[in-house]
Image (cartoon, rainbow, N blue to C red; front, side):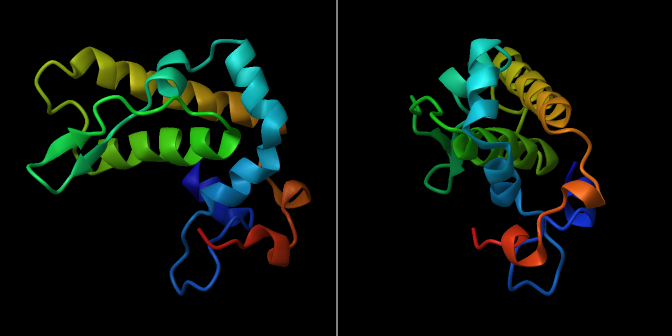
Length: 138
């Protein structure tokens, strides 16, 4: 998905390296996408019990009870991207007693990405925002 976003012009502004602009993509999906995900129960755990951050202080996960995600930007950035970052950087499936929850978060994140692709259609040149609109600072 990151490859598709980059190649479709969803790039963070003011960067020499190409980084996917997930915030711009979330904005392009809009509130109707979030409403559809909630209505269809696509990511109940991801939305209702979102992933926590690994904190430097004691390498503990926090906050203990994060607030539910309430919009499309939070769903993509604090949900899907946080799961992706934790998985890629080796922090999923390492905490004792977290296996089932981590697995569900990964499944929910994938379900959101699949739903986004179906909702918005393929990411391609014709869907690409203008360079000025595609580049946002996060």
